[in-house]
Image 1 (tube, rainbow, N blue to C red):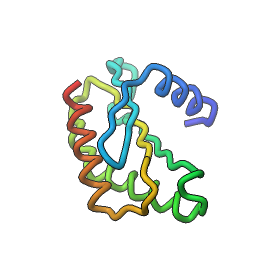
Image 2 (image 1 turned 30 degrees about the horizontal axis):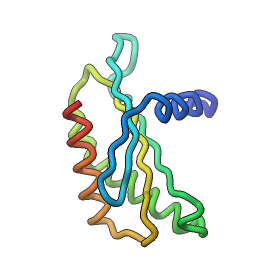
Image 3 (image 1 turned 45 degrees about the horizontal axis):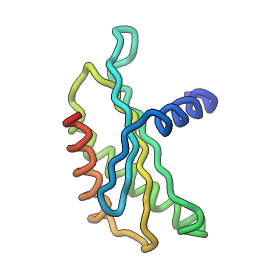
Length: 116
């Protein structure tokens, strides 16, 4: 996906999306109905870690990798073929997480998003 298109989706998600917070992750999401023209495997995710909270890019990138890994291991929760999910995960706390905490909160977020 081109960067211009990503920026458009990012602005659209933040402006019109619904917010969820399950400690230590907040998320913004939009659910759209799928057209027949679109591919069946489109689920877009984004990860944000604030630079004020984690100065070193190594730490920020590690948290982003943990968020993405947790999503891809649990994306089977989104089995509806008639919807497209756009989700942004935002890591909120100051401490460095372990995988279990992130995985638990991502699972809870995905289950709540599925109910919408």
